[in-house]
Image (cartoon, rainbow, N blue to C red; front, side, top):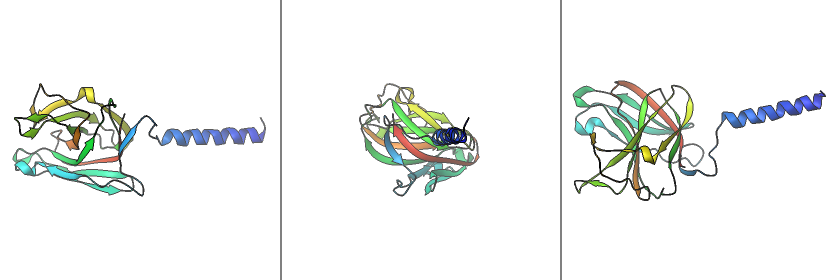
Length: 192
């Protein structure tokens, strides 16, 4: 082989490796939140088990590598959850679900939605699905709408319909019944 051909093959290999190492959102995905770069979205608001006497503490901040949802989960005083959320107005009726790029700690988190379903004519029904993270590794997770389960304040429900055309709130929650520190970083969230 000539040296020009060898150099060309090395250059192609390096380009291919960099493309594979840093996944890009495909054209078929609709970016909902982008937490990196010059125009990063704002961090989400927090809601922890202190609303019912618990002692968990968690919040969201924005850094160079995305939104960081972190804190400490406590099981004291019947506690055990921490969450961050944002109010929104999305019509995702053309999507099958939501994809997230996350750097986790090995714990299982939930992605949660509110749509127009109301429990007891007063409270929004939560539609949620768990996703597992890999400690110290950026991964993409897909949460299909077809796998969402219904609940209200931890009580399992049935008979309500998730309306992807009218998504009013999106949240991330940790409620895995394991006390201790946690950290989840989110680069972006997209509908797919």
